[in-house]
Image 1 (cartoon, rainbow, N blue to C red):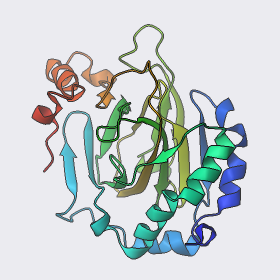
Image 2: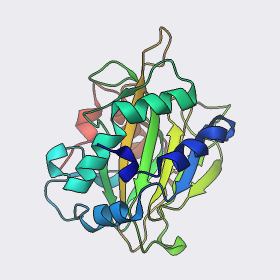
Image 3: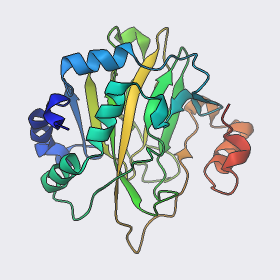
Length: 261
């Protein structure tokens, strides 16, 4: 498979030059990540919000739908995800980032298609650290957006937050807002105190594809097997929300509150 037929690969690799200099944690935003014809085909054939095959999350901290099932991906999406997990792509990415190790996640745990309708939202959160199947560390997140008619009034921005020196369980101030424009890619380091979330979607459908990359496990690493959500300012004194977050972040209790429909 010729990865250059899908991705503007040289443009992507060049954009990584200042990756580690960005704040509040390493990231890049790249418009025109895919060849335009590929991006248009994926958008046209993107799974519908009403599709019953999607998993549905609907709780205090996350309102979205998703699937990581390869059988549900249309041909162009399937090929793209194959390319993004290929040895060719990862070996060059590892070299550019000067990494000792970098692994794909063929199972797309937490990745694949994500879709949000009106009022869809993700509270600020930290991703899980240790992969539940591979026992590797989740290191990087690559997100690609497929929203041709997205405007600022539609919200749905991907938000990055500063760390909070006083409380590690909640984020600091909002640092970056990224509009989910068509064929825009965001690549960021999710292994640090990488607080991120999605602002509420307004009167549109937000479509994205996510891929995660992993590294070898270190001797000392935070043992977080589930995402840690933070309450919104309006939820800070809501006991039900705080209890939900506590249960949701524990691998032994998360199934009690984060049920998929």
